[in-house]
Image (cartoon, rainbow, N blue to C red):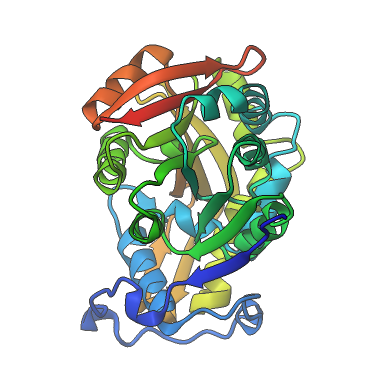
Length: 361
């Protein structure tokens, strides 16, 4: 008989990370009416979430010499939908390479693990690519799948997609990566092994040192014998990489600009989106793509709920996301530095991308 349990565990206000109050220096920020602020997000945000969002926006936009915004805030309901559209663009070959490898090697991945296995996915999105892993596992055991997402709409789509697989029970966690993974680790039985999926190019959103630190934190949550399947986009020619992050149809630009629209909607900002242009840059020294929003004109930006007023000069940019690229030889070293052993690696022939199976030592 099929097991199709679907439920969601959401982060309550008491579990959200608390931030210090903003400085009194900017407490008299003017309130500017913006029609965008009349549009409520599809899912109401708890007060603690908005407080953290505001604190992150304030801290990032005041960085010098380069203003930033945290990439995690790209993924609200609209942002998640736009990212799903990016994944089917012909210029963005990464997602198809990721999926091809999973489809071809799901059985190999599963066969490398001792039963019983539970699966946790960090940043699951809609979870479509994960189906091959879950179906391979379901041929030999009942399986719990724990998608971990900060986007409630993406989590709902994932639960709908994966909840139809026989012998798979879905328990979604609306939490950050590490908080969600710790919650999953505490609920499993002592005999259960855990396979953590970190697919796509998600590790590439971290600076290399921060990526190592993140993987060490993942390792601390795991037991000896648990596994991590890590997707890594590989270095390719600069023109191909830039086109993947600045497509001619403008979907990636809309995805990037939605970050500013979200600040308008949720924090009362007055960004005029037409006065910014999306730009993708290849940083050869750091082997990374950078996404920037570049001001077209002199602008006075007010964000009342972040207690913030800044001036943007023409040509000044806000750095919204990085995507680091790798060479295959450095991935073994990354595993060793962070408490893992890379026991297998599969590389796509059409778009240089690798799936790497790490075992917790």
